[in-house]
Every structure is written in C-alpha cells, then in structure tokens.
Image (cartoon, rainbow, N blue to C red):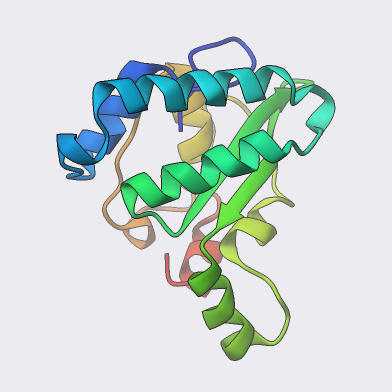
Amino acid sequence: LGSSTPRHGVSIASFRETVRKMGIACSRCDEGREAKLMSDFHGAAQMSDVFKTDVKISSNLRTICDVTGAVYALFWVLSQDRLSIASHFVAPARVAAFEDERQDGETFASKSCRISLQPGQGLAGRTFASKGAEFVPDACALSTASFPRLPLAKEFGI
C-alpha cells in the first residue's frame, strides 16, 4: 500500500483505488467502513515508530486481507532513507499450506522482512514515492529491476 504521509500510511483515495482495481464490490467495503479502517490504520501507524510491532497494525492488515481477499499484507515504514517491513499478516490457510510444503515456517512476507528498499525502488518503493497505488496482476511477469523481490515471489508462487 502506498504512502500519504512523509513516513508511512495510506490515503483513503489510494486504498479505495486499490480495492476497486482488485474488483471488490462497493457493498463489501462501504465508504464508512473504509474511512474507519483507514483512520484506525493511520492511528496505528503513528504508534509504530522505531519498528515497534503493534497489535492494532496487525489487526488492520488482517482486515485489509479479509476485505480484499489478499493472502498477505505488508506494512512498510521509512527509517534512515530505507523502507523496511514493520509488520505483516499472512492468512492462516496460506501459512498452513506452506508449513506442510516447506517445513521451515517461511512465507513470502517473512522473507520479505529481510529486505529494505529505497523510496522509488521496487513495487513498495514506487507506491511510497508516488503516494499512490499500483496493481500488478502477475508479479512473476515483472523484472527484478522493477520488483527486487521477484525471486521470493517465484519461490512462493506470488
């Protein structure tokens, strides 16, 4: 999700655009619920300085996955001119599938936590820098130059 503040967060417009691009029916995410979700998300973001994992952020990431049908969500923050993942959520069914398959407890989200990006670099960096949204129907069709986590995406079938 893109940023609308100098440090982190998402704008209602960016969130709405992302939800609509993903084909979510308006009835599933009405404007009032959307505004509350984004307000809670921004409130949680303000408490997450210094990479503190916050229960409210995790809860909001889960809600975003529930609303959009996504299987994971990553919350990126800017610190010392680098973007890093401060919190993430992976749908329990996705975690269970990889536990059976991999035996190492790793997911795309957990391995992505080891990567930092500059604003403008990669998908997360581009959306952060533009303060907008970007929809990619097939991450594996991108190049490593435009999506540095491409090897991870391929490893986890993203």
